[in-house]
Image 1: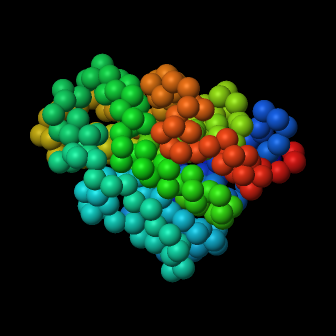
Image 2 (image 1 turned 120 degrees about the horizontal axis):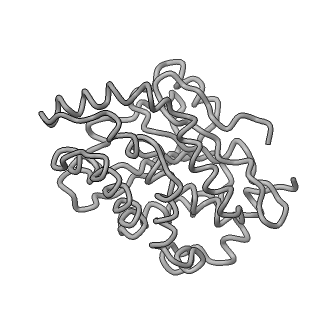
Length: 257
């Protein structure tokens, strides 16, 4: 694929087309259908115009209800026909926000939290429900955007499942996942985000301790895969994506390379 995967926007981080990858049977995932990003609450007018040109038919917001309330998406004028939202997961606040408030925010604690998050996310019912809904919409073959807050963890797991279901091998799935580290200027963001968290929690924090939370590491996604076990079983028995569904998805979302 020669086209850029990363789409630079003014107020939205980590906006990417995650098509273009080769499948193990020699096909290629179509471009201009599968998009992923961080939240859209800081969309500028220019961003909304660009997103509008993508012709999105579905946006799947993987954030908790409280996150959506605090930072509501700013949608383009021609808003997608379908908005999918994650149900309440039973938390008073999103787990990552609770962690930031209660943890000592050391390098070790952040690393441990990220590993635990990747064990938790794919097994939670509210995530499984929206994952299932997204797979159903994919059958329509129309442009779709999945996003969470930063567009890397919840979104990264779902994007990895979609690419895997389409027949992309794990090495390329991880390569797509790791593009967050190129799409987001983590070094530039660390000081301001650390200051914001210090102001909110009234606790000192070393900015470098937040790096695992702002970026991604292959071992995080590998932990999710290990927790899931057999991806084939998870897709069919947990998300209801049968072999026939996967064949239909490949017919719709891939083409000859």
